[in-house]
Image (spheres, helix red, strand yellow):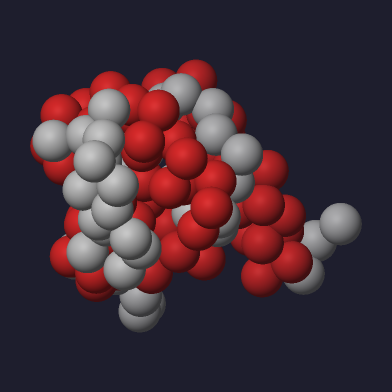
Length: 118
């Protein structure tokens, strides 16, 4: 906790914890300031002084782990046996159906490695 002068109030541990959570959630500074009842410049100063990072991009592993935990994907025996070409076609269609992301090339590389192809 820091000292307060007549123009500001001290930052509490609870304020800092909420600030960290809101930064991780990529909440805009103005919204953080409103939630903490502080000015945007006070929030930015605290962020700079405490070196609080802005939310991070998820790694491929984090995306897969989260999907697995939510039951969105399952591991085990496949329902159908298929060829690598069928899998490649399916991945190609998925690429067209979803917004491309940073981890998709890693998925393709992983699957190629899994099936032992170059």
